[in-house]
Length: 217
Ligand code: E4P
Image (cartoon, rainbow, N blue to C red; front, side, top):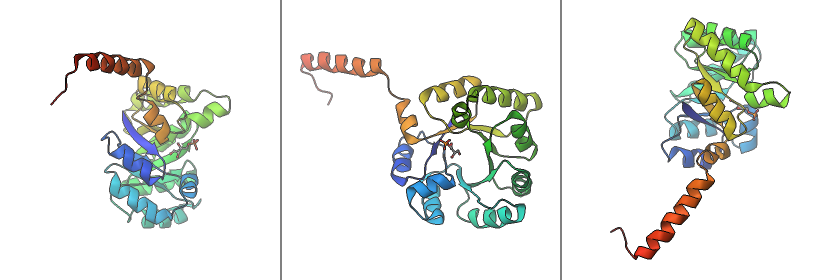
């Protein structure tokens, strides 16, 4: 399973990238606004830190406008993935861009049928939002199971990018289902490593080691 960071904060991206465990980054207009940075500038900086795909989202709602914006965004770097909303214009744009060899992330996916359309449009990634699904009393992980089943039924190679991840159990469940990628806030990615018994174990080993008076040198 690939790990993407869902953020436009450079310091966080650098920290995660230094572990060698980061496979890509996703941004959206809200995350860009939160960063307070210039969209083009910060996206370029992220693309230089991470080798993998970096999603940059269009804001136009019509196909022609999306194509114009995508043209500007894809010039930022080779690893830019154009993010388009799951609308008819977004799907049309997805088809045109992927036919042309550009990576596309179809975002704001909330149903299995929408994911089916994204795959038919040749999407590189589809982003089902599990957290927002749960927020509305729906079962976000059931959506991931359904999409996995449909994509496997027809051997679609669109990658399922689990988005709107809020906690470590989302990551666990997505991995159990066989989602291809998950994108999560850096705090969630860092929380994955935590276990009380690991901390306790280190404490015990270090206490016993101190008793030996030895050094590794
Ligand atoms: C995905 O690409 C989105 O940027 C993101 O996961 C949205 O998450 P949110 O529902 O926490 O805003």
